[in-house]
Length: 202
Ligand code: GDP
Image 1 (cartoon, rainbow, N blue to C red):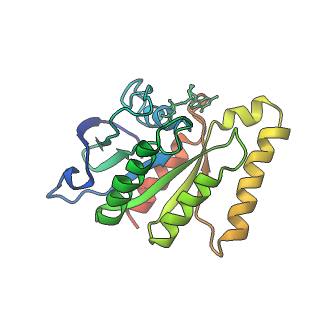
Image 2: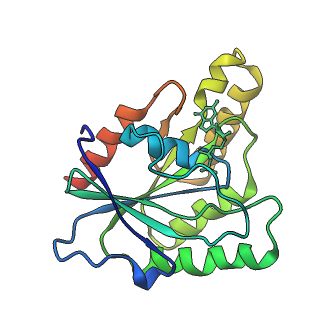
């Protein structure tokens, strides 16, 4: 499941502008709250420093970025949601075109929904998970910044994770899979790559 090559394919401003691949290679979409650690995780997965740009400001044009991995599958960087200080228009823009992407992308295998393990469960993340579920879009919870859990010796951030996992367990008869990651230590990187390769071959 190693990443041997990564090519930037395209930035798309609308769902319908996303690449049309005659080979119909499978893709995985990465999404999460702004600042969840999405760019860091993508860079860590492909072991490059700046594949996904780590500085995005609210209000800046939001794009869907396609990366082709090993010439055989795509990793898709979706705009972050829930900017703390975004104008209302930026928030609704997110919904409109990211939802459009999810509802129309036949080659999507699964979404990776990033959850920041260093903060308590956020309603907007649960809303996003519920929306994906209602629309039958398969997804995996990917917890980010799990190095912080260890660094603070359990207690508070352990609680965040546990609370979130309790919420999931209570909510779903069959909870979606979840993977713990850290872009700082590389925790979970191989697990996540293996998980995606299993989903592709399923
Ligand atoms: P994005 O907005 O979701 O793309 O988030 P970024 O990747 O830009 O990360 C947001 C902030 O969280 C930055 O200050 C990162 O350095 C930090 N960060 C991201 N991933 C990790 C992680 O795994 N561990 C720790 N401790 N910090 C992280």
